[in-house]
Image (cartoon, rainbow, N blue to C red; front, side, top):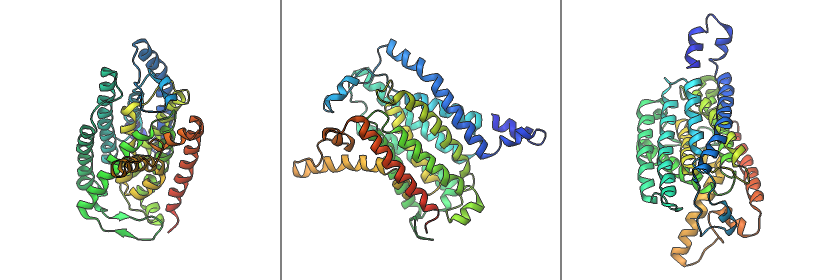
Length: 361
C-alpha cells in the first residue's frame, strides 16, 4: 500500500520518491516486521498459556527436553502474519516473483499449521504422517515451479549455475529444473524443521541465510550488477530483497522470545514455511548451489537423519548417539546453549563462503 502511494506521489514529494527504492523499503520492511512481532508475541504467548495449549515433547528425545513440554507453540504463525502485513505495506504486489514466494510460503505454513494442530488436538508429538506432508509439500512446490518456469524470467535460466567457476553452467532443461527445484524446496522445508530442535537454533541461521540470499537477489535484479558479477539477470528479483528483510525482522522478533529458555516455539507452522521460503528465493534467482552452501547447517541436519536411519536399517547400528546431529552433541555433553552458539558461528562462516561466490570466479 505504501509502495503504491509513494509511486503516485513521487513526482510531487521528494520523501515519497525515497520510499520507492529497494534499499529504503528493505529497511522499513525489516523494522515493520520486527515491530509487529515484538508487539504480537506477548499476547500470543499469554493466550496459549491461558488456554493450556503447549508443545508435546517426544519421549524418545533427550531427557533434558521433557521439561519443555507445554511451552506455547505455533509461533511461526506470527512470523507469517508479520510477513504478510509487511508485504502489503512495503511490497510491490504486482511483482510475480514476490507473490509466488509469498503465496507458496503461506501454503507451506498452512501445512505446518495442520501438523501442529493435529499434535495439539491429540496431545501427541506425532502430527501428520511424513507421507502426507511430503505429498502436500510436493503439490505446493510444483505449483510454484510451474509459475517460475513459464511465467517469469527464471524459466529462461534452467541450467544449474556452479559457483566459483566463470560461466560454468550444467545444462538441466525443464525436467532438471523441476527435479532440482523440488529437491531444494521440499528438502529445505523439512531440513529447517529438523533443525528446529533447540531454543534459537533454527531461526537465526534462517535469518542469516535469508540475508545472504538478499544480496544475490539484489544483484540478480539489477542488469548492471548482474552483468558485472556474472549472475543470471532475473527482472524483478530485487523485490525479493523486501521479502528477505521482512523475514529477518520477523525472525529476530521471534528469536527474542525463543532464546533459551524459550517462551514460545515456532512449530512446523514456522519451520516448514521458512525452509520453503528460503529455497523458493534461491530457485527464483537460480542460486541453488550457493543456497546449499550457506544453508550447510540445514543440509547437515537432514543428512545426519538420513545416514542415521539408513545405517540402522541396513546394518542395525547407529552412527550417531542421537539424530538430528544437534542431539548427538547434546548426548556428548555439550550444553544446549553451546550447541546453538557454535552452530550459529558455523552458519556465519558458511554464509560468508557463499557470499564470496559473487566475486570468486
